[in-house]
Length: 215
Ligand code: B16
Ligand code: MG
Image (cartoon, rainbow, N blue to C red; front, side):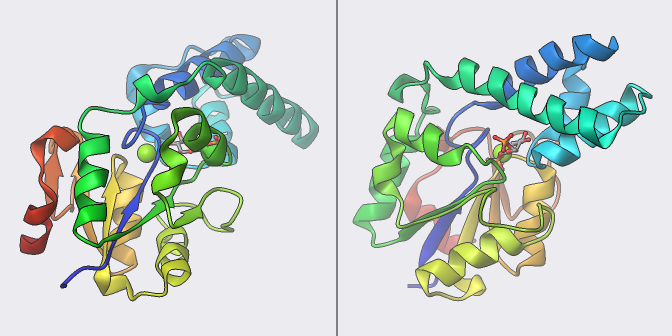
């Protein structure tokens, strides 16, 4: 087979946790009179928690001490954990489960490549965890997307080459990471905001696993 594995981003690809990140950052922003816009939130997709806070403080034009930043990172995560505590399998995005089943039937390996340090909790709450042969998340990498590390580690964990992987991503930083790692990439979202993917789909209801061979 031309490709051996599919590497999935989590937020915005398998589940829509971006809405919970948005709410949690909005709640935190109140402390320094900052109102996060939807457009700014787009730029936070796929990047780490630390980098997200740096961007937000820059937009808010707020100088914070390292101690303050640490406290806010913790606070944002506590709010986020509360928001995701009720997550369940109903929050898996449309078409994801049938697509994973097709991949499994066709012999593909399946791995996760997420920037989130909370990825495992989300996979457990939604029951998605059983589909994955390897999980690479924010706890296993030192460089964030658009660095390819998260996907390279995924390929390594599965024991296959980058050229044998297809990445599924909703964020520009993630598409760039996959490309930098020499992998094929399917973007999930709109071609107006996502550039450089080998194919764009609006959801997994748009694609059949057999179509991957033509990438
Ligand atoms: P956490 P992904 C990313 O997940 C999110 O898109 C991004 O908005 C978030 O800041 C990042 O995870 C870190 O998340 O605070 O849970 O560690 O899209 O790479 O699955
Ligand atoms: Mg994402």
